[in-house]
Length: 450
Image (cartoon, rainbow, N blue to C red; front, side, top):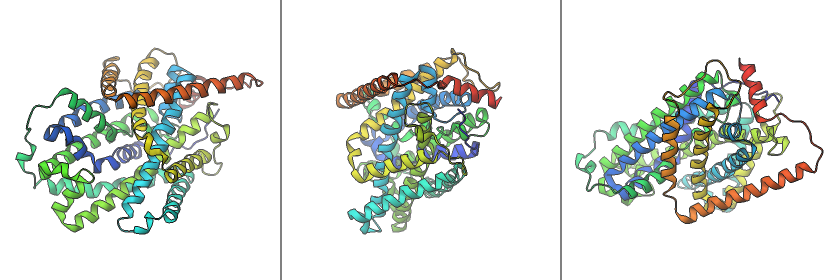
């Protein structure tokens, strides 16, 4: 099967997409959440998360440079471990990690804008706003990946400027005593804070879903991911130092909006307006990037026969998976209106870590699985040392989940397993239609790239 998608995404665009998706809503509450248990010592968690996300990014860079078709994490995991694990990864990712999270961001965007437009708090106006939001972003992305990426690049710069102003001006207003540690942090507190903080580092998994639209994937994927991630890690550390250094012990008194408090200290009332606008732009940018990337998960699932086939159709004029984009946006709109996603936010976050674990393990598996690959691909130095280290740290972070959170994940996996068994049972009762396996599909594209 040919994807017939247009390769419009280069290294710079991918790096901007990584930055846009990672520097999302979390950055605006990140400093207070991290400091709640550890105070000034919370900076430790930033380095732990930064180290872990770099290990994971290296795995994404290696496997992404070898597999140049759409689907990202799902395709990587299915290619390595087969259709059952791929089915779990696909559905856990696009629904658990993506749709519900995007619905939450959309509602948060409406709530932020209601600060200046109170009418958004009414049910009718709120619903119309969400319809316009998801419909508009779907339209932009259906028109072509280059339009979707262009919009993401524009929003990335728009939301970074206010934050960079805070870092630049805030550096001259830091009180050194606010950065001193009051006590040595306990290992359990570090683990709990890292689990919370790591969610602000998510986003790589969505950025690489457009594998079938990357120019020269063997170069674009590693350079785009690692350059974008490097900026984010340095930027996050700077934000934490500025917030802690300016607010000190008062940081915990501003849990809902610590950066607004910092901006108010630096720029007065105009700083508050600046941060409210930055928050809105940030949320809009994340939503746009999510629709651009995550709709390709539906496309890839349909391509491989685990989701309805119509989702694999490509718009003949714009060469985009238009029905997948529309379906994903529609689901985001529905759950944003319903609001039922609130009970599944923890599951959404934890499922992302499980997806990361699957990609890391897939990197090891594909080292020893014969597939046709381009001659020049990125390979992590040091053998499997980095994937093994990443696996160990992910498992340590997951060990800090509570019993109810673990129970929720297990129930979700069991439900998906039951659906998979029923789907296979139905297929066996129908006349079999010869289809290419995911390995054959990937190999076809690898040979084509060569």
